[in-house]
Image (spheres, one colour):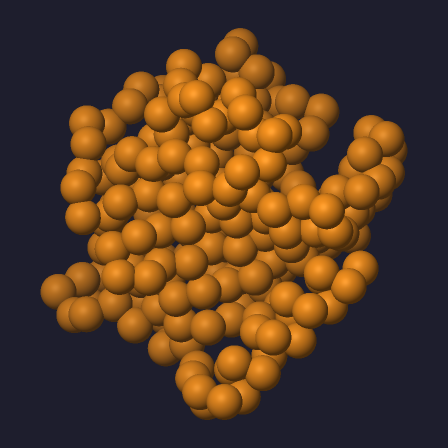
Length: 201
């Protein structure tokens, strides 16, 4: 629990020191304006795909470390962005970032190759700390119950994050004794991959 507390406390201190607030909602007519937050920045890349890789060194990520990762900012609306994450030929994962009344929500949509939902799907959480370009998402009650039911209780302490710094997008996960980072170069779009499992182009 100390990692969880430390991350949130440090984030809160940073917010206090910088006195930054995310800008109000994105509108389509603002597309040519410099993005003011992470949601707007991702929306500005809608339709584009970017290559990346694992930046952490946990041995449990060895399978991922040997693969090319592709994030595809595939679908965007005023309040939702869907970003499939392809790990080599595995097209099972989609990040779903939603704007809420109080901040943002991150969910993980996991599918089998036939399009059916994986038992571990729709987990994630609502934003606890929001910088303009860095958002933290502690596991919500649905996710904690799911992880307990599927006998992976350690995941109940998950805190996911999304961050854009310069032209680098980072997706991260932290919990006690676990750190994961995947980074993507937003300055160099690549060919869009096929649709994620369960969806069509």
